[in-house]
Length: 249
Image (cartoon, rainbow, N blue to C red):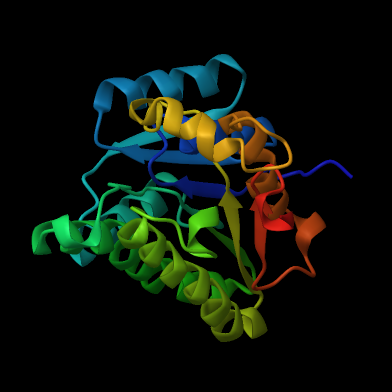
């Protein structure tokens, strides 16, 4: 079946580049009105232009998601732009500094958990109750394969996304009875603007997977679109690996 999201509004955080941008383009291609967010207004408007050039509908909200206030304000703007409703929430925005535990400052720790855990929490708190009142909605969290196993230098990032993986299941239990499905997609090494600085380390990490190479954002996005649509009506609380098979080895 072909996913049809016509008439639905999707909010995608961190959508000006990488996986978020690919997700926004794919959701729009399947009929959703997409509200994209990010800090870079130029890249955001370029992403909106790309959606519209392909015949889709999109708006951009420039926002620095760092706390509960910024999350709640974004939710209100998205509802207004979406004609009074947000039907799909994609918690994609994230930060991923790597490094040893002993070299992590308290400021680093707080910043990672603020963006990766606190912001999704308050976006869900703001938007899920309205979805539940309407009896339908889909929330998709973007995690990472290193939330499921230990990787030296990735303890801070991995632990924050492990929290999101657990929240995915907890929110599925909380909101599922009201018709709101909450799931997650867990990407493996993916070649994006954000991972460009990893250099050969990205290829080395990807070499540990059966597929053997880094993924592309366009290879992650369809999994999110699937979870957003009615074809996934019986899927609740799942964390779907899109990682080149890393979970198989």
